[in-house]
Length: 101
Image 1: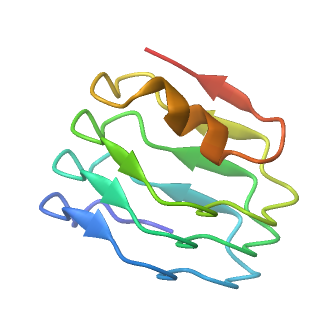
Image 2: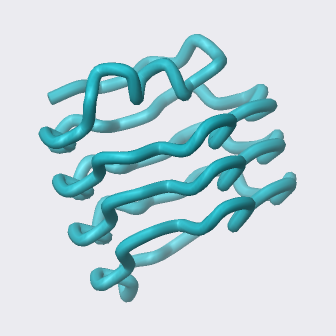
C-alpha cells in the first residue's frame, strides 16, 4: 500500500486495517509525523510480509494486539524510530526480522 502522500498522518486508528487479508506490505516510511498505531490496527492481516516504519521517527506507541495473527510477517523496519520504548518490540507476536535504531 502506497502512503507516500500521507506525510501528515499522525495516527493509525484502532482496527484501521483489521482483517485486510490481501495486504502484502505496508510502507509507512513517508509518514514522519506518525506517533501511534492503535490497538488491533493490523490484526489478522494474514498476507502482510513486510512493514516499513523507518521514516516514523516520532513513533512512540503501538497498541495491544496491533499485529496479532499477522502470520506471514517477516520484516519490520524500525531503523529510524528513536523515540519508542523497548517494550514496543513485544507488540510483534511472531518472530520477525526487526531492524532497530
